[in-house]
Amino acid sequence: MTTTATFDAAALTTALETRDAEAQLAVYTSDAELTIVDRDNPPSRPRSIKGTDALRDYILDFTSREMTHKVRATVVSADRIAFELACQYPDGTRVLCMCIAGVVDGRIAWQHQVQAWDA
Image (cartoon, rainbow, N blue to C red; front, side):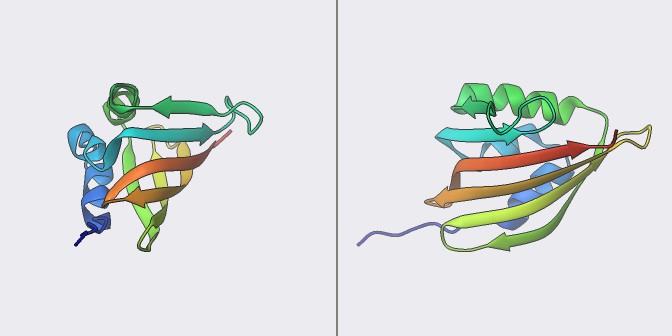
């Protein structure tokens, strides 16, 4: 008999909102791939971050920034999660991030992320 773990969206929300890098990294598989589209990485040349070490570097950079994070509109199914992440820097600059991810055995195996900043 095979058991499949379910994704813990509450743990991800807490990790993101408290800027807990290790807890964020723990929700990804060791070979997970994050694809980012934003002002510096257009759809024709998205940024790809793959594997634990690269994800750790990205998450450490993300969590080291002095800003607030609020997870909104989370949707979870057996093999997908989607969520909106609203961020704000102390100077008032806002960033909005929309994410959809594939879940395997309760962990994120791939994630597509679109980010937009205030001008």
